[in-house]
Length: 108
Ligand SMILES: [Zn+2]
Image (tube, rainbow, N blue to C red; front, side):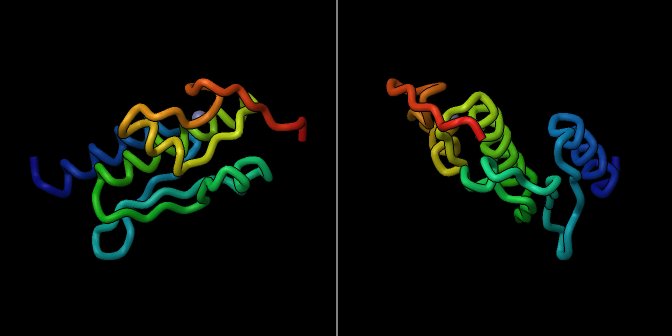
């Protein structure tokens, strides 16, 4: 399979894993993703509307952190993308959903 085809398959596979995002290839071959407008909670948690990374693994790592944060925030936890990234990397607690202290945010 040609390199470009291989990348198209990889992009489609990634797209299937993150249906909330629209994935695209940016200038210079970057890997990018765009989210619907963020809610106040998502913004507060440090989520991004647009991600632009140099490589597919970098975009995957960022999408995983964003998705984990989104899930925890939706469950009412004080989670942040930065904390979720550390959780995915080192298994450090990111918020009450995965850590020792359960702290929930007020209803919107
Ligand atoms: Zn969390």
